[in-house]
Image (cartoon, rainbow, N blue to C red; front, top):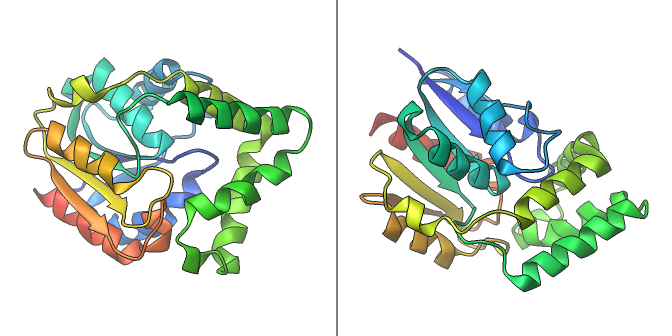
Length: 232
């Protein structure tokens, strides 16, 4: 019997981001990619909206901003989550420097230069070798356009306000996978080592030759890790 698996995308990403994973995991999981939270500007409301649509119990995987939402779901309804993957994300709050950069990007969006935001982000999202992959970069640009300027501003506003969740991780009592790309420039490996050390029994998986977006950059390796986690 396939288990429900809720896959939450990150900043400026849509359900298309999980396309390769849905294709590779659908024999063992009922993959659900929520979009009900796109028009919200805080993680508390996002988590409530996703929980309202989700099955009674489900496996949970969130990447980047989706990982922040996943942690909020665990704060609100830990009993409904059967297992969790935190992928290319962090349990820490924003640093002042990160908040300053986010506010600068929000300002770009507000003055009508939203199309310039994604090209600025690409070098920190992808492994350097993937920056020349036009199909991949075009796909990321298309997803960003779908989320749009207002959606981007709402998402960044939520990220700025997120809490430090490191203490919360110590209470996780479910099969947990912490996964990241070796060359993730946005949420580096040491943040994942920290999360894996805080979650009792968590497994840390590092995807080699990969940036911030393993499900797109290394779909086979990512799916294999998720498949092992689903079977744990």
